[in-house]
Image 1 (cartoon, rainbow, N blue to C red):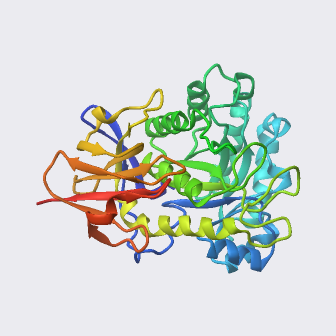
Image 2 (image 1 turned 135 degrees about the vertical axis):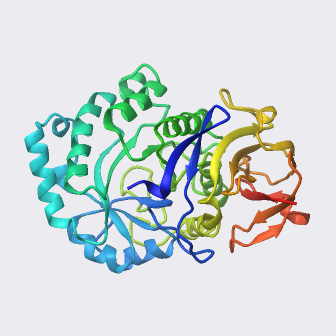
Length: 406
């Protein structure tokens, strides 16, 4: 399965993402997970009420489910990654021989393959590069047993140590993963919102590195971001959730996952969308709002080709500044990141994000080409002439703008 019709093309000597248009859908409806995955990072209970709440929160995947929970997942209108204790790929399982791997994979696939709620199979979270060869053999076994389903592996962030990564650099870690495992998408996590109100260094460099690796491989990437507080991470806020979602979109992401949806009952974990008692927290409503904005933007966003990303104001190390813009002659605003795209007709589009986690900003822009600037509403997906109060962005908010031919 090639998610969203993804292919790589070469334009003006540089690789860009090419996305075939997603199937036509009513504005504001939930995108298919094959086109844009919205995943609650949790093992979900076999509980019809909780699964219905996941759907109502705007997710199109249920997270990780046991085979016994698939009927309830399906009843909620969702799909899931199947998680089975015999097929979790720890270090010992990564070292199993091919025959034993095939036996375990075939046993699980035989049990669930034809179930309509199966989207893929969970393998491993945050592996060291030393187990990539073993993960490659597991992924190949799944590809043979159930070719349409996705094997799920999630990678470490760039703040992992060399010992954790198993490589000297993060770029080498990504390169080895792609060359060894041959994944059909890259998923990674990066938790950057800190309890002193700051952003952990390296957040945008991680997006840059994963975007580059995904581009080179011609596959999508998914970003796992925070939806709870733990350790020294911040309690969820509307601004933080918007920031994480819109920066992922600006970099051309085709999936987002939230860690965690269910609050773990250990340590100082708190304020995930569902608390330790199974009740909704204020985060549930905040997260639903962000997910519904994805729904509204998706019919337009999924037709676009990601061609560039630059920063205005504060430019993180290793990132481009606004002098490297492909589409814009000018952009004004306090502290912005701008994803640049083209539409199916080759017309420019930009997604501008307010990087400030605490303050709103006004912004302005001028395209290099003539035309009428249109804003895609994040609330109903309609296209409206850009002007007036549309120039204001709340903390963490983004704006998707299109240039119409004159």
